[in-house]
Image (cartoon, rainbow, N blue to C red; front, side):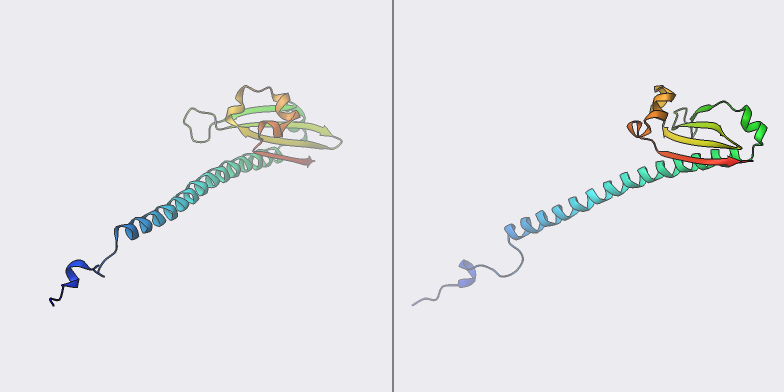
Length: 146
């Protein structure tokens, strides 16, 4: 009886099959997709944190500037200051800062709110009355006494 060459008809044990390669590629693609979503999420969070940091800086800057004023200078200020601020000088307003200064005995109550520049057309009183509805970026109140 003649012996058949099993190497010719049998499976070779070298290398990967097509199905194994496709399954491993699918697993790698799923892992990469998850990582890509994490990168996008981190970019969005960093951008939001940057806007929040800038807004808090603008509030602190305004309060520090008002602290340098004398009692008479604070008395002469209008009750509400409304400013549009272009941080990066690209002719687009990035923030809207509203400062309310009210006498309170021998001190002045100062409230500074910072909104996104998109709130440019909204009435000042509406922003002050309900800042959360207009997504306030920073809101700080302090007393300045002399």
